[in-house]
Image (tube, rainbow, N blue to C red; front, top):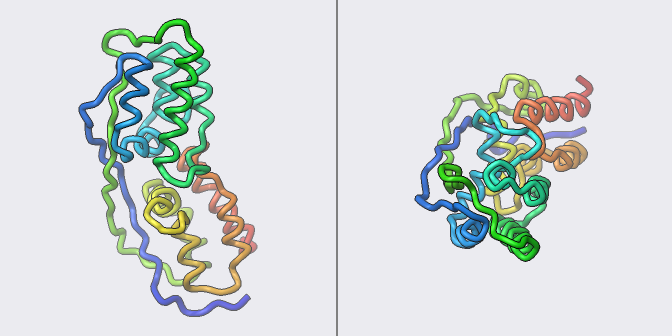
Length: 221
């Protein structure tokens, strides 16, 4: 397996998501549909991915904030189930994800005899996110070093490089694969295995463990 010196070392970053109020809220399912049509796409991103970086004490059965509110705010288990199984990774961009959400809500509005309402104080408050990035000063020169560094990476680093990178890159690819493909030859199989890892339906700690396993099996460690 032949590799070459990278054009640039891998700069290990850490991050957190800053939550910013949008001033938009919904008390019932119709308002929810209307707000969903117009809310900033950063809000769609936050309510799907933000839960990975903040403590979540709701039912772990639901993996996004929209599904959680449908279940516990609107008491609509049917809509919650439909929203809860959405995998944002299969959509080309956030706008496509938004359209899927709107269509599911409209479908539910057509099915029910009356518009579901949340109790006073249980409205859905749309929040948007801003990624705050920190440079750890750590630099990685080889794929083997990347494998060795994974166990010590923070969940913020895992989020930034393996999840958030997909919306920052033109090819919707995580930073690990982009770095490997741009700087090394002979690691196509590792890139293929990384591409098969779905980062959404697990915690960041579980995702880190999965990535450690992928690298470990590839390098025989």
